[in-house]
Length: 266
View 1 (tube, rainbow, N blue to C red):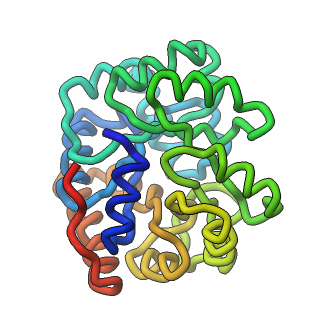
View 2 (cartoon, rainbow, N blue to C red; view 1 turned 180 degrees about the horizontal axis):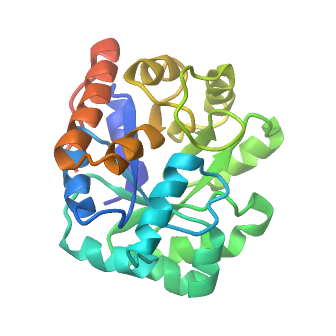
View 3 (cartoon, helix red, strand yellow; view 1 turned 45 degrees about the horizontal axis):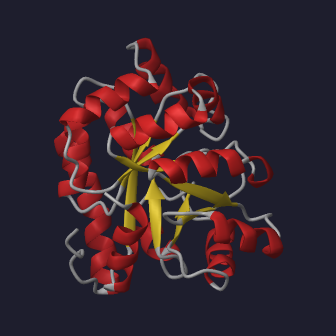
C-alpha cells in the first residue's frame, strides 16, 4: 500500500494524520497489534526493526528492542511474520543503517517491498550519504522517508523535502524519543517551516505522548507519529485491545477538533 498517496488523500480529505509506532517482534501477538491499530484509525503504521544500538531512541523503545532481540527477532523474521498480516494501513519500517548495510541496500529494499512495507525511515543516514539508499528503495518501490530537525537550516530542509518520499518526518524536539509531559515549542515552529517548502505531508514525531499533545501539534503539522507512549503500554502487558483503545483516543481527539472526514478508501 503506497504511503504518500494514502496520506495525501486522507490529508486532502480534511483528516489529521495519525501514525502509531510499535517495535516488531517484541511479543507473540505483535502482528495482531498491527491489525488492531489499523482498525482503530491509524493512517499508517511504523514498525521498528530492532537494533542493538538505537541511537535516536530513548529508554522505552530501547527496552522494546532488547526484548525483541532476546526473543530472536531479526529484520527478516519480521518480514516473514508480515506475510500473514493485513494491517489495513500502509506499513513503514524504521531502523538504523547498519541493518540495511549488512543486508545490502538492494536486498534490504527488495525484502521490505516483498513484505508489503511501503516506506522506510533510517534516521542515522544523513542526506549527503543517502543517495544510493534512496535509489535502491525507489527501484524496489519503497518510499525513503527523510527527517528534518529543529536545527536544520531552511536551505537543507528544502533539499530534504525534494528528496523525501511518503512524507517529511519533522523531529519535534532535539534529543531521543520518549514520553513527554508537554510538546516542545520547536515542534510547531519546525512544522510551519517545513510546510512552506513542500506540499508533501509533514508529520511530527518525537515527544508526542497524549491526545491533547497531538491536537496541539496538528495546529501546524499534517499529523503526528506516536511511539513511546504506545510501546510502554505493550511493554507493561497490553495487547491488541489496549493498543486499539490507545489509538482510538488519539483518533477521536483529532477528529473531534479538526472535524475530519473519513479516510479515503485505498
